[in-house]
Length: 109
Image (tube, rainbow, N blue to C red; front, side):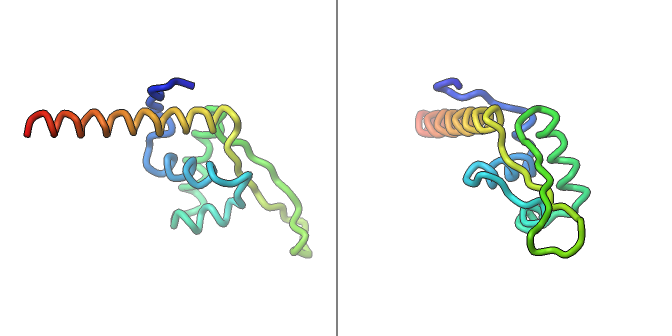
């Protein structure tokens, strides 16, 4: 982790940023709940999640559902420790950028 944060191109994509933001405050989220909360299709969420998974930022677990009679499993997504650190660093970098721009605006006024 960096005190100033580290801007992360992978996380910064709008939907991936929102995925990380939602996962940051929970242990894990059901894929369907995440999809519905974001208002995107399965394919879109899968594609964006895969980028985060490939980077080691998101982990996936498939579990049987106690509320279902069939054998389908539910996909759960969670931020890994690496993902949590990268997201926190990215947010710190964004805050630094926004403060820097505020100071520039005030200096030019």
